Length: 299
Image (cartoon, rainbow, N blue to C red; front, side, top):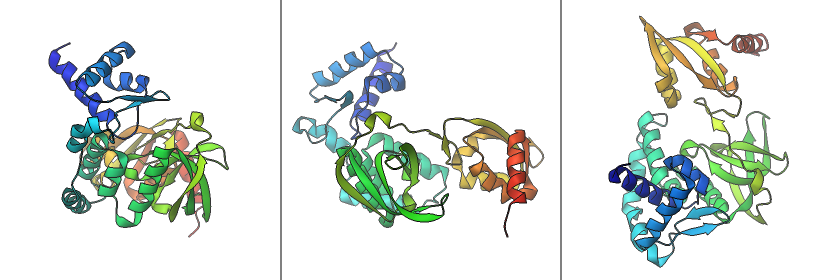
């Protein structure tokens, strides 16, 4: 392995551990594609140049409030003026733009969640995201006040242990204390967040699931293949930017989308809105799901 490649990995590790939330030895090894033994060597290298590295309950991080890490904190910092300018610039980009999503992903990988949240979120949602960031850092349970559930079609308080955000802070993963399972909650549907005094009680059960391009979470991916008009293709890429890499030209003005999804709810909403411009090729189960939707549709 070249020295340049080693340096690149150590710098990536330095940035990752400075993000505000710790990472386990296994997570570090998998991301950097190195052995656990090499992880320890890299950590020793970081310590040898003066950084303080903490290991709490198996989660390794570089604390930003430690005076010995002051130089790194200054490196990973937005001034108030920089944050304001960056916020204005990001909000001028269309919400579904691939550029906006890539920019936020890069910011998220470089800076701690609270700082990114304050910079990119609209004022109405930013306060709730900040409270969720605080609750995650303190490992506290929260109450989502007046959460508007689209599936249940009702507004209720939800008691959860929040532990992870999805891309662009669109949703938050939390362990639902009433349903006793991990669920994803849309941040835009939360009226307010109340941080409770109770600490996490179910940390060992916290586990997020993969989210498909239609923003549906699940752990049972299903391959799908659909043919679309040029108009439908452009609308798909605008509304769901991650679909861009899964679309190919099929000849003329027809395009093929081929990928995996976690359930039919997300893709069916897209198809039903463009029924005359989308043809489902695979699987048969999706065709049956759409037919049932059409038969039971109320106008």
